[in-house]
Each structure stands twice: as C-alpha cells, then as structure tokens.
Amino acid sequence: MEVRIGVAHAPREVVLESAETTEAVLAAVSTAISKGTLLDLVDDKGRHVVVPGAQITFVEIGESAKGKVGFHN
Image 1: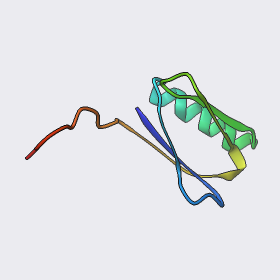
Image 2 (image 1 turned 30 degrees about the vertical axis):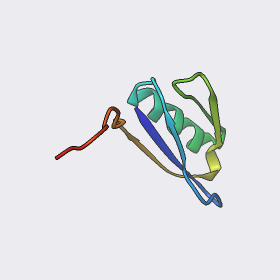
Image 3 (image 1 turned 120 degrees about the vertical axis):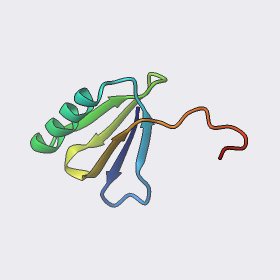
C-alpha cells in the first residue's frame, strides 16, 4: 500500500510503499501524533522512514497503482 505523509515546513510529502496493514499504519500514526513520539515505518525495501509525530500534518493511506504500462483507455 502507498502511504503519503505531510510534514510541517517540508516542501514535499514523504511517500513510501509499505507491506503493513492499514490498521497497523493507523495505529502507529495515532500513537506518534498523540504522544508526540517518532513515527517509524518500514517500506517494502526494508528502509526505515522516521517522522516526528508533532510535525505530521496529514497521512493518506491507499492502494498503490502498479503495472500501468502502455496505452490505456
């Protein structure tokens, strides 16, 4: 799934592909925002993406659009 995170005072959002469930990502985001701790997510390549919970402006979670190649109607 694709996760987009808006960070205060950053010109672009953080985008990552994660194998985590929607519920797991939501729980991690909720904890980071409510407690002001770091949000630590792992992308599908095993890299950690760390964002301060106090700086999160929005989080968008959705299915990734893979495999669109060529002409499509």
